[in-house]
Image 1 (cartoon, one colour):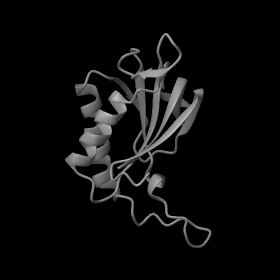
Image 2 (cartoon, helix red, strand yellow):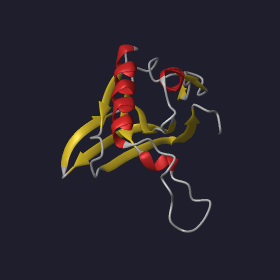
Image 3 (cartoon, rainbow, N blue to C red):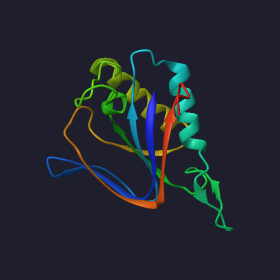
Length: 149
């Protein structure tokens, strides 16, 4: 399981010019899955997202989590995180989970975040989405449950 995590002041997802998810202070999480992902990967990612200390404390140090600051999380499914661009000019997506599995993992991830007390908004699985954000910092991190980076 992979994610691109961005600390944001605001993020919005629209589908066909209709807002489907919107947050203020929090995290925009682009989340991708591979066929081998299971509960261990899901729990690792959710725990990391909820506990990631990337918000500033009173001294200006990154010491607070999204939960600590009362922030929200906007989760957008992103199969292209498993795009392989090592050969040729066109990415291969053979490492990405098939849609049925990816959607199940996506829904379970959102549910797990909510069960940990997070306010979560989402995009629409497999839809063409426009994602807008005001990156705070900017702070952008890559997470991988296999710890490849």
